[in-house]
Amino acid sequence: MIPMARPEVFQACLEVIEAEGWKNFSFEKAATLSGIPLSVFQEDFTAPLDVITALFRQIDQEVLETFLPSPDLSPRECLFDVIMTRFDAAQPYKLVLQRFWEDWPHLIPDTPALACQGLTSMGWMLEAAGLSQQGLPGMLRMQGLTVLYFLTLKTWLADDSLDLGKTMAFLDKGLSHLEKLAPYLNTL
Image (cartoon, rainbow, N blue to C red):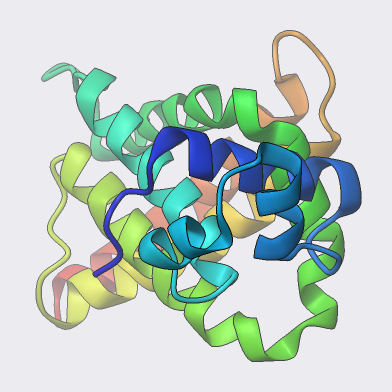
């Protein structure tokens, strides 16, 4: 498990990613930029991908601290709200996520770890929405929601509108597709 990094160390990493992109990120650059010794970065991170994992975990935490599901909502509506809350929590990091999104496909070794973190994050989003992530149906929910989240993330990164209309429409359509599969998942 990756502990939460010290805010100043984490922020220095994010600033380098914003300025130079993910493929040009290094802890040495973050240390030089911040004046924090490189050894401090090593105490908080074991590898560069830990920075993105820490960002996802921070966004997860913000969502879980602020999201209050309404008992009047359907599971689909609740998932819609929790994912949109996640995008609200991610807004301050949009440029970092944009830079990462542009570069990570070129860094194939990071893909499995990113997929695992995506599954973990979406498991927490299912929990926040009151949906189980247990058993085969739960695993399939997590996988479906993870794919939908990453596709919606791509839409969100390009959506500069104030109301996030394109993002909401894409997410709503994707949740409709997942909802059609739900009866099959509940019979397993």
